[in-house]
Length: 468
Image (cartoon, rainbow, N blue to C red; front, side, top):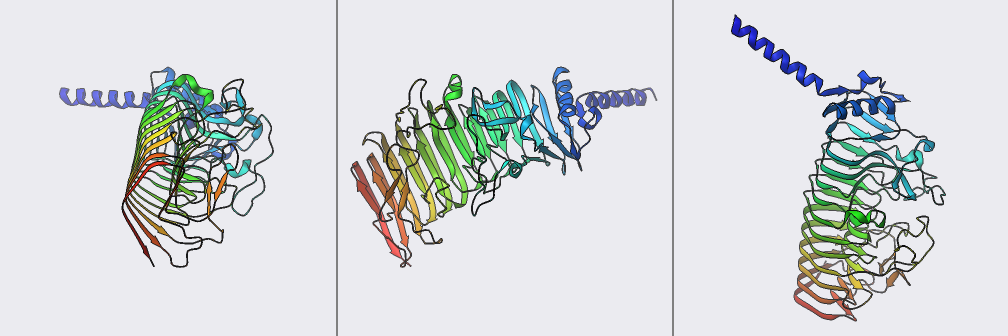
């Protein structure tokens, strides 16, 4: 009897201890009726959880929690139960915290964290960015952007700055109005098993942006995004966080109207030690892209075991169905809404850095265009290795084709002419070993398997060409 009593007391203590670590937002006044703004109640639950040493903030099932800006804090797991929805409030006037610091021209923050650690976002629920509420008129393949000058109220979904030990797992994140998951200066992050479902017509709707971040693992994700699905960069606004490096991406499926996997274009530091493996890309404007447009460098990157298909879209979207794209060109001069944050302080002209030791292994692509490798000088893009790449060239849209897209860059943004399997323009030390080309006999503007223009040491081995 005494032993049973002790056991019951221990069980009760355990239940009470667990209960102390769980914070249900409804208990803090959240209504979850899809109408009222629940931001204050949810923030109260997050604050209490963090102040009391950490735990889990629960958004319970069968509720829609509409809310304005929220700040996540250290040692807090935000858990969305199945059928729970956290939805961005549609009032543009409540978003006034810039996603890019002093640069207010490129969107505000909705859910954010600053200088924190041990943050998790988990569960089978949905984070809904309410993107269409912030758009202009719907067009054929995009939405118009509302006119802005140096202040853009569109909310980014997740902006996480200087967070150490971050986990985002299993949730669905959808309908972002601007960037969706933006990691700035983060260290030791895991993004696993999420569904990121952005509207394919929303411009600037990036999926996952790794910005000055390191030691990041992305795996088992499904991403649809009007802009880039996964993008690595080093924005000038956050230069204090240093280079972006030691990144792995595996087992992901992606669709994009721009570039499914992109490195750049904003890059004022170093991006290095990066691996993309075992991914599928469908119906994208560009497949695997390195778009260096600033003084930063991109080195030691490997793309392997990737199946992709590309197609042409309108000029609203950057890219011309290039399956593989490796470039370094100086950024175009201009007076942009970002108040020239693209350039070093006090300058209105940019320069571009080195792109080197980039490897493509076991890539299979069906596309309306070929691969493009190029830089502004012959030594800027070098040591590019293409091994066992299979290209099937098939026309699938009414767009004319025969164009490679260099934007954003100084001078002419397009290279026009015939479609080649691999077009090398002003690069050096390019090795193509195992290029297998299959052309539709009716393919227009058909060129050569490999065209070398103004380059140095382009070596082609084991080239094969066929028709169907």
